[in-house]
Image (cartoon, rainbow, N blue to C red):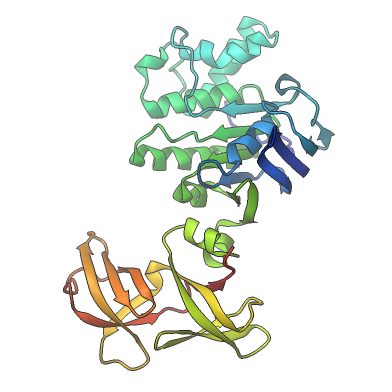
Length: 357
């Protein structure tokens, strides 16, 4: 069976909130999940991302606001009345059923005949690369194959929205990379709307059209992977989206859009992004740090505290007048010595003045 695109559904949340008595799990928020997009809810444990996913699924009732899927108001509908499917972290496969029966289970429970359900199950297994695996038990499959069965079981119901709750957390690092690529390619082939929950920044960057970063039950920032990594709004987003150094500097505005940030003896031209003159928070990506000779003028003096060979690159911790900086250097053939004095320059990209939040 060839995977074909179907009409995708837009998900719209307006003022949606969730409270458990006096505890607010999700503060009132507005969010549009575009039709046919893969949108990731990203954030630390307890930030509200899974609760938000469960409200979309209908597994948690909305305390406030309205939720529509494909233009239909589903706020007061149960999970069974919404055309959505969820892939759980645990896979939740029935161990006594073979793969085909696991995939067909939802169809049969919904009233489909066994022959029709089995035919659709086999076709969907082929879509996820498991054609011919229908007679096997889940215990006879690898972790990655079990994950594909869980995806097939959700896809066979032809949902308007496909929901993933930390789907790769039970897999080892190499298999996670492989599976996230497969999920992304499958989503793009089918054109289905996907909402994907994870706490893994690399996973979010790899699969998403849009990332919604959550903090303290609210949205800290939403944007494309590039926007969040290269233009974070605040310290939390900047430091959560990959490795980052957070230091203090002094901003001096030079135009309507740009300014100069002074870091120790280093002066860096940056977009001031509407921040006022004076002390500001500055985020520096490790790969933006360039190690040069200590004698070079216009550099930030630094002392090498640690130096580690990582194969393709070297990693350093540097003691500087603005604090300790973590640096990633592409030249790993000869490591700088611990205690060595060096100069630090900053690249044009990967340095930003941000709001504290």
